[in-house]
Image 1 (cartoon, rainbow, N blue to C red):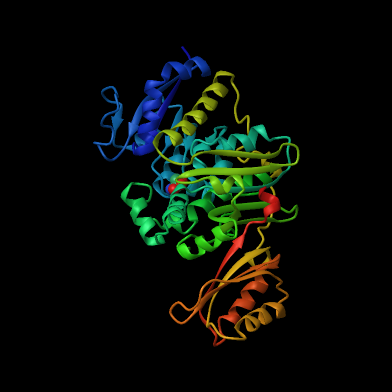
Image 2: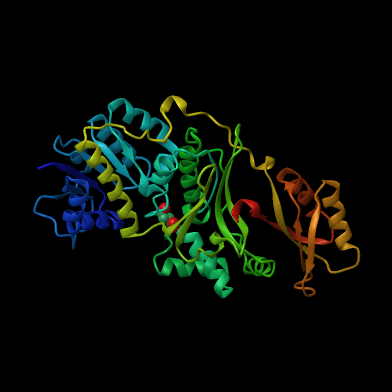
Length: 438
Ligand code: HSE
């Protein structure tokens, strides 16, 4: 009987999901893959963590290093997370000639170049479908289904926590802090939500997608990253009045000799598919020169959706093994000698449309002062709205701009925020360019 023996490292939420699918759907998977996927060992330091999973005596152990050193194990599934022990275990497994499946986006984004190089040298695979978008097969889509396309751009909602919080503020008008508390209470946000709400988790995922799509080395450090902590119900309400919704977007465009890749809250038209992706759901829109637009939509996190992606990687490895194939698909989709070092544009160099909310004194001449400074920096105003009168000595004045350069906006706002009729730091939210999204 053909068999692939699996060692699972980490039996938390996703680990349990993987174990359960491997046990409950074993026959189904075997009937498709043509090879039996057997969970040989599960390692977790918490001896209680395997509770409820129908594992045979001796399958559950506490020492993960025993798994990566076990000569009988063919594939190691790393679901421990973090960048230290997980990295050490993966490198050891690779060194020992084992394939690896991981959901660890931070590790791939930061250390993937080095880890993939080592895996290629050893003739093993590091598969990572579960690292981006949970159950959505975005990595398989980019690496395999769209192989004939130049990928022009990708726009994604890749963090369920942020999408849940923004949807909650949009639906109820509560503050960011309240919405975060709500997300934490129902288990959608971590006790320390920094990775999610500051946009870092999304940046890890965008780093991975940009590399696969454009054939560039993984480059997390140059991706501009801004989270959702400063988004207010007032800005969401203004956005609604202008026909937009606010989402934390991962935006990536291939300009040929550089890449525009960034993570920040953005306004998108309420007629756009992505603006209707609500709650903890994820979606990613990809534009290729042959395929045109494709949108994937689904659960980007959680036990079973993420486990589903892990199993898909395991089945690929099993099928390759059955056919005697190694490294059929290069880790970052392009052959290693075709991976380029494409620069990522600094945020100052991007051009987009802007929503600016000024907190200004409500008196004659204020608008002309603000618009005068914008004009000095070549920023053209598309529309101006002032709703209501004074709130705490100032009134919100909202301007939408035509296409403007980020550096000019920042210089203009630094000047505007210094004038006596402006009371608070101006809020800006970039508006995703409609032509790319619709
Ligand atoms: N914390 C992530 C999210 C899931 O909220 O989408 C794992 O990447």
